Image (tube, rainbow, N blue to C red):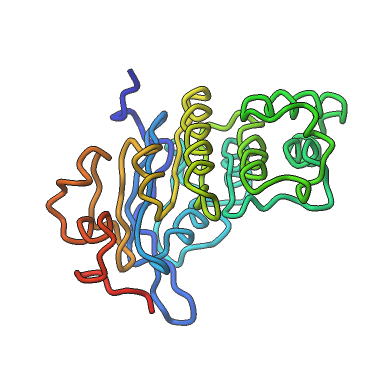
Length: 256
C-alpha cells in the first residue's frame, strides 16, 4: 500500500496569480504525494487551470513557491527537469492535426529526446495498446478519430515518457457518459501502472468519484476544503455540498 504521508512530489505554497488586476489565485497551498490521485474541483473561472499551469511553469505566479520532489523551482533548468518527469493530458486533447497518431504519441521522444523514428514508433504503438487502440491507428490523422479515441491518443502521449506526475485538464470534456467512464478507467489503470502521482481538474462528479483518492475544492482563489473522495457526500462544508449536488442556491454564485 502506498503511504501518502511520504514527501510530496509536488507542493504549492501561497501561490498567487492575477490578470489585469483581477486576483485569480489568492494563496493556493497544495501538496501531492507519490502515487496519489488528487482532483481539484470548483466552479468555472475559479482558477483550476491557472493552478496547474503555474505548477508546470506555463504561467509565473506573482507570489508563492512551487517545489517538485522537494526542490524549489527557481530557474529554467529546474523547470525543464520538472517537465521531463511530468505528463499532461490537455483539455480537448490538443493533438497536432498535421502529425499522425504515432507522431503525436511520440512527440517528446522525437523532438525532445532525439529518439530515432523507428524506435519512437515502436514505443508509440506499445503505448497505444495500453489505451486499447490498435496498431492500425498509428498512421491515421487525429481528424480520422472519434472524440473518445482522440482522448485515448492524448493519454498515450501523456504516459509515453513514463512520468512520475501527470496532470489531467478536464479529461472527459465533450464525451458521452459511457465513453467518459471508459476514459476514466484508462486513467486510473495507467496512473496505477506507472505508480505516478496525478493532479486532475474537472467539474464532472462521475470522473471525480472514479479517479480521485482525495479531492480539494478551489473557491475564490484558495483551497477551502480537502479530504478523501469518500467524504464528499458528508463533508459538512456548504460549498462542497452545493457543488456535489449541482444546486444553484448556496454560497457559490453561478458564473452568469
